[in-house]
Length: 116
Image (cartoon, rainbow, N blue to C red; front, side, top):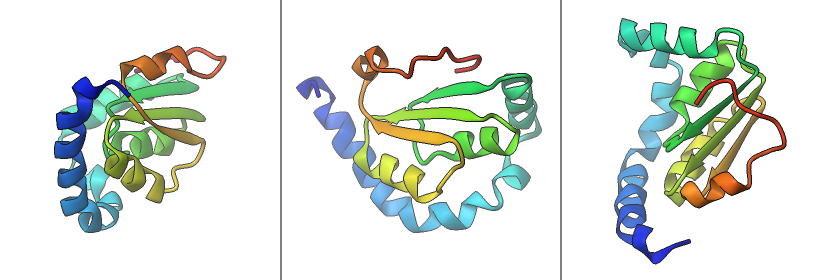
């Protein structure tokens, strides 16, 4: 990966190391603590969508919400290895999590995405 991203990766890794224990606890309460406007936006995004891309997916919370709304093909990409680890721990159905930057978008699956 491009060395330009190194400071961002280091900062994000530190943040996700600090919150990694909280991630699994918060996962089950996400929908209840999410602002109404964000829930409506996710409803709109996932409506009739089979595949969604979350670039900068962090700990995978939006991917988990999309899966709960019936999206059957999910791809999350994040710079941070710690964020990717947290997202993978969620074990989100029908979801791939990749570590990488915008350059990874040259490697997407053979299908298109209805939401991003």
